[in-house]
Image (cartoon, rainbow, N blue to C red):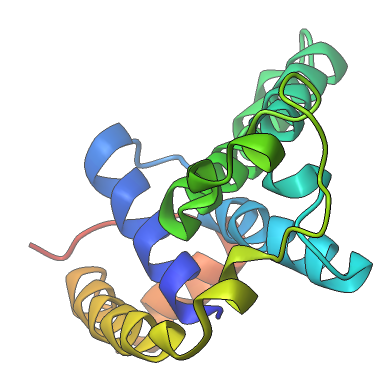
Length: 158
């Protein structure tokens, strides 16, 4: 599942933060990171726990102290990681979500794997949201797409 996480994260951040300087490229990386890591390891693991997103946020804040331009870009990664947890429903597995405070990982599956066929309607909904975002941000225009790939910024055409 890729489209669901990309579309929901981008639109959620756009409507909540309304920051025209936000770098959505790093948000997309953060939104896909938990599944990319945990699918590789074979099950729900540290990336599907809230502490990993909090540690990533703390790391970005410490490493970029005094360097606002890079902080502005990299802060999107932990935000994307947190949104992934929300839109994945990772909080439904207390042992994994609150690790190391509530136990361990056991044989927990990555939520996207555990959902099985339910991923299909979520991806279809994600495609619909992506089409909405495509129109909202005017990405049919080649220059607006180039601007996005160059800067990571999205602005509404409305």
